Image (cartoon, one colour):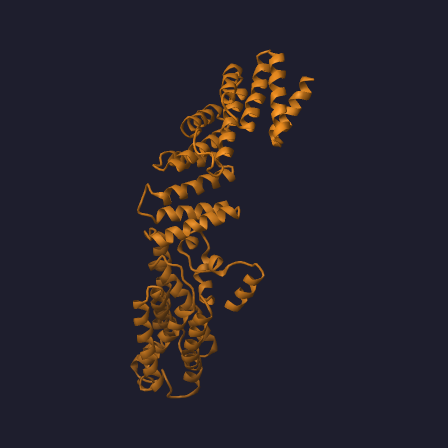
Length: 430
């Protein structure tokens, strides 16, 4: 499975860490397959080799004693149970077959409990030593998902007790699991039913706890979610961007810090791209309340755009005016400063035109033209000045302003919607 993903990635396919790794927030969002798929993934060839070796050591004896079908059932159930336990107990992303392999160790523990002869085998002693070493190593290494190991161990023990033995245990009279009172109890239907019930209860409670458990405050995860939110936004996956931004904010202890601001920025812009302007407004408002001037400026801009698209021209114009007064004389070398300034000038002037407030619009257009050496801003002011003068019945003044707008655009090479609109107005005026 890991090799297959390497091939897929080589041809530009999906990243298995993104689509199939155990991720609590994605499982909560409905991607339940992430409780299964991590057991087929590995974090590198070394990880794959280590688990393959462990499987080679433990797997054959369990398969011989339990039989092929029961071995597969134990392996798969233990792997899933390990992921469920990890989902219930830890927020870290995880992957690997270790939970399933620990489940096979759990199956051998059941063999030891039921058969004294098996307990005396050299293999059993080695297996106990391997189990102890791996568990101790897991508790001393923060990068290892020990809850997946423990969940797999318990799941493997319960499922192996529930399915009973086949293979060698059935073919050889007096072999493992055949003698003693404990073995007789283990073969009874009530005992097996109880093991099934315990396994199901463990799975259900684990999933329930994982869903109900609040997100942990973990800075590394918070930053990771923030990076993922921006990556999803750039890929036009706006729902995914919102979800990761919400997780980023949920995991930070600083309610008014930069992580909150970045997360709200992504959520606001993503909702706007989805056409959900009313839902975006509260996040733009939160940015306006930020102590960071850059985010405050961004908040006024985004909220003005939201109100404009909601056809609430008064509020859109008000936010744009506040931005012009507060940030309109800022550093023009800042990325996208002029683009934001031009867009908000358009918001102000177009809102007056949309509301039939020609005198106010003309005053605003003249204000923007005074002392401004920016060709686009001047052309914008003259264009809207022409519209307002035309609405006021001043056709000669409108032609003069429109001529100035067209001249500025011709001399500076400006195009886009403004040039097209000015030329259309000129044709209409004859």
